[in-house]
Image (cartoon, rainbow, N blue to C red; front, side, top):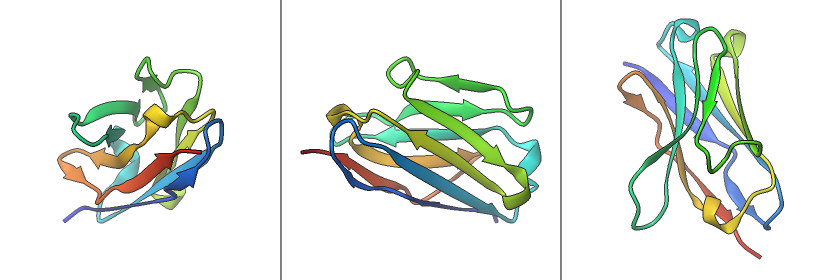
Amino acid sequence: QVQLVESGGGLVQPGGSLRLSCAASRIIFRIYEINWYRQAPGKERELVATITSGGITRYADSVKGRFTISRDNAKNTVYLQMNTLKPEDTAVYYCRVGTAWGQGTQVTVSS
């Protein structure tokens, strides 16, 4: 069974940065497309960023130019670098690989 463990969330002021990590196990990591999602209170879960097995990236319009997704296949880990954070980025962030989801990590952007 695939296991995904996110980390790196926390409280940050507007304009600040965080880097989220998602470590995968029990999976041939390098062959999978990996996604980051987020879910804010009272809102539906939304796709934030995707990275394909070949390293092609895609982003939601709301985060383009501020977030960067990357992967390290040697470490079975995907990252989400989040810069210039805004209060509206506050959410629980999840990584997904295939049908497997991590437990999520809370990101709160507030002064």
